[in-house]
Image (tube, rainbow, N blue to C red):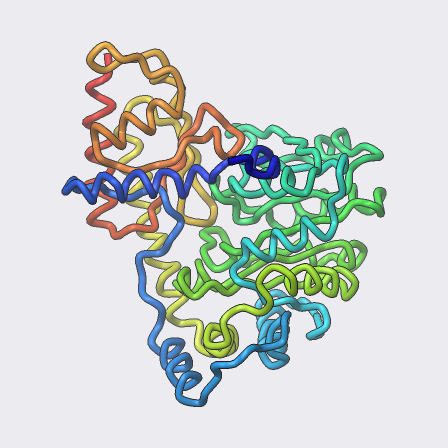
Length: 396
């Protein structure tokens, strides 16, 4: 069977691949600790679940407008004003089946063949692949741990060319935990002001999981706001991964274009998820803040553990729920005669020997690193890291 060449343009997400391999081992009766997926181990807060149950009883069981119910868009606007001091109208909002679809909509609406998309490393695995699907050209802006995995204004300006169409980043960042504060964003904005043809996608899905202070959005700068597409959703901050509800805020022209695309792909997201979203976005944030505090405690414990594992060199994440250590000290070491040449090999070794699922840094644009999630319970985190420590100690 000859399949579309589209499938050759992009790769399967390594995050999902490792989770799949972990499930296959579990099916064989092996106890696998999953530190690969970015999924909070918490359940959806009760008041949000109650809103969904009421929506079912109230017969919200029909098609909705493609871009979401009007009152859901209004709830997004309320949240953006309350939490981010961002003023948007419902015409600027598109509600989608998860933040991933919001990203896909925005990239497909903006990027043509040959357009360059600047993406600082490390980046979430799907960014580059969506650009490839759109036939754009991925331009990676390399960062380093010594610089906190952040790009400078000078590095940004040096990378911009006449073909640059889009700058795509996340803050807090998956996988590094990097967080750009208001001053750092201001320096980047000063560059964007010189290049009015460049749009910016700001992925803010980890907004509430922030260990260093209040969230800063690049959309708060009026001089470039019309060119910024804010991406967010309910998965991380509200423990609603399975509900599949994301949203974007953008200028009305881009929002309308994304709604047109969505109308052909999926139409609207789930009506029940949308009703639950109103409650999540506009009512009590106490459960969200409690989850964030739990992640703070887990981060502290993870950093204590990692400090005692030779060869794992990591920075302190400022947000999200990952560490992103450099593991190149183990390249070239072996186990039972098999040499581990790179981070991919180390991940497979830890999965098959230690039975811990993690993700190679190659997928995030930094092949000397691995991503380890601490979105699991503290008990499983401690077991998982002890297995990692013991397995790495076995290498010769």
